[in-house]
Amino acid sequence: MTHLLEEASHLLHQEGWFLDNRLWDDWLTLYTDDCIYWAPAMVGDENWTDNPDNDVSLIYMDRPGLEARIFRIEGEDSYASHPLPHTSHLVTNILVQGQTEDNVDVSATWLVHSYSRVHGRLIRGGLYRYAIRKTSLGLKIREKKIFVHDDKIVGPIDIYNI
Amino acid sequence: MLDIANTNRKPLAMGKPFTPRRQSAQSFLEDFPEKNIFRVKRKAFTDPDVYQDEISQIFERCWLYLCHDSQVADHGDYISTKMGTHSVFVMRGRDETINCFYDSCPHRGSKLTSRVSGNAKTITCRYHGWCFNADGDCTLVRGGDDAYRQSDLDRIGTDLRPIPKFGSYRGFLFGSLDPEAPALEDYIGGAAPFIDLVADQGPDGLEVLRGESRYIMEANWKLQTENSTDGYHVATVHRNFATTVGYRETLRPDTGDALSKTEASRILSLEKIGSGGYDVGNGHMINWADRGNPEAGPLWSQRGSLLERFSSGKVKWMLERGRTVTLFPNLLINDVASTCIRVWRPLTPNLTEIETWCIAPKGEQPEERRARIRKYEDFFLPSSLAVPDDVRAMEGAHIGSEAHDGGWNDLALGAKTLVDGADDAARELDISPVNSNPGREVETPFFAFWREWAERVFG
Image (tube, rainbow over all chains, first blue to last red; front, side, top):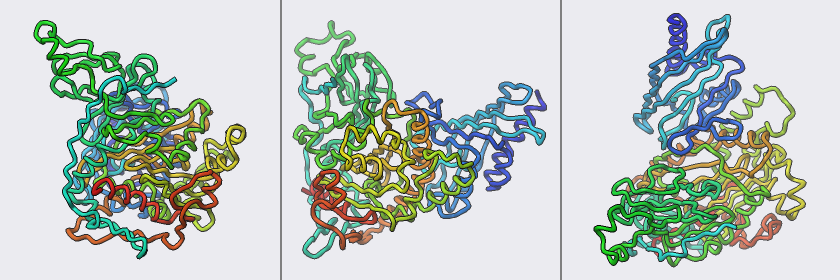
């Protein structure tokens, strides 16, 4: 368990590091080809949507969707994404919630501090839930679910700031 | 049968009386048709006195969109929102009755709902414990029997106060704080056929899907009103959206499934498609463009049954033309690649809260529902590939308008092609707009908004 927790923690911390340093291609290598990146939307004050086929999510993407987001950011043609804010991911309270022979269920808590000249300092927070696959190349993210706790958000929500 | 109540009790007009600040409309709007001049002073976006008058004269008088009736489907369902400075909530009572009440206890004014939406058969004031049923009747004045004279309770009025005007148009619920407001149908007026184009899409009606989004724009609310009907920014601000989803399509295996296709071509191929803008009266604006590939729309499979129910001209409008319908002052009903309701409320002159929902025909096929949702997420959310760019563009426009004498926005784009009355496309829908313009890249529909705005703020 300790070894697995260390390995999972390394993966999550690496993800934050890659995003904060805009190492997009390195970031993508952390995900499996059949990955899902999912930020549910809120329902009222207490709940988040749980059926992406019938409910709205803030983001629900497959790997081509992630690659397109990177394309959009790197293209420098998106008014909202250029210049990018400087971000700092704090990923903590990492717990292994369960595992099978091939998969690990990991939870974590996050805060992202971001700074841009346009919006100044923004801090958002929430929870992560990862479905991680054990592969021959190490742990890879099969599904990442991001609960964004902040309602009434200033500025865009994108892969680099949640 | 839906019965909109709010008629059984005397409404309380709580808005303060209008005390004009006597700024002249011409300081902010130059509207001289004989000289072909229409321009708006940029200070209209930033002036604090103008803002105060907008709150009292527009947001506390006009019909405002509150929510859709599918969001209050059951007894006790409520949605809490704001109209100008007033907190209000829409609630489904017993039977089918829906009311809209001031969200303020008759006793000492406390806000009654503690959630943005919920279900409660009884609303209990958290401060002193007065209780109300879902029809607004006071059911308990705690300790009242011993301490209140009946004559005092009668004078205070213990039931919830309905807002002065409340009504439904095709399931879209609106309210007004002005007891003298015109009938809702008259207010919606020329925009009604365009709401019908959405409302008629499901034989069983529409539903707002689960999953909410609220976000803050650091810009004046009127920039969102303009942006919602601005066809001119699409090819610049959303060029990036088109290339991004186009790129994404190349990464996915081609399943041949039309639903999975995007409509990005519409954004990049302006010269090839029909498009236009209308002033439909009362400050309401329409902007439309032919869909690049209408078969990619989630409603396309229903074409046969729609043709049985409606004229071919109307079905063409439903399926083959993307439409943005902007109702004065702050509602957008958007039916393009997906379907969106957006509402924006001013918080200060330079801060606006925006809410957005996806609306869809009840009972649509799962694969169509899924496609509609994915396309909604692609475009209409602050986490999408498009809205963040819009917001940034509006924030940029606001910053550029903040100068003490920031000059004028001269809205002359499209003036060359503006015609009075209907064009061919309008005749296909059998409507009579105030004026028409055969192009999406026009600013002339804005005239409708700004004239209504000046009339209400300075009238």
